[in-house]
View 1 (cartoon, rainbow, N blue to C red):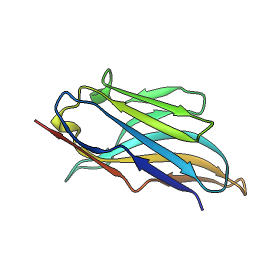
View 2 (view 1 turned 90 degrees about the vertical axis):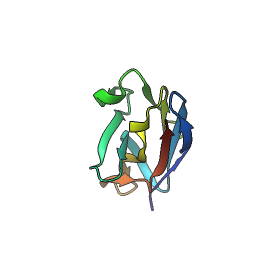
View 3 (view 1 turned 180 degrees about the horizontal axis):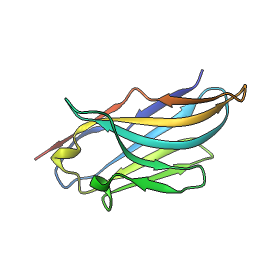
Length: 120
């Protein structure tokens, strides 16, 4: 059973920083691309940032220059460093990973989400 467990959310004032972490655990062969999505109340889930296994990154325009995604392949963990946070960054942040299972079947997995609240 593959699981993604997020941590690091919380309440922060505008202009502050938070670092999210997401670790993949369970039985699997390898982790391909990983990413962070977010969903604000009444909004659709949107991609925040993604990173390939080799480290190629992409970002939503709204977070470019403020957020940095990184990963540690030895720990099967992805991070999201969020700086200069704005109230509009308030959302539940979800980790996503494309994982090759122990039976070599590829699946898309989601964490349960972690709430980030930015006060003005």
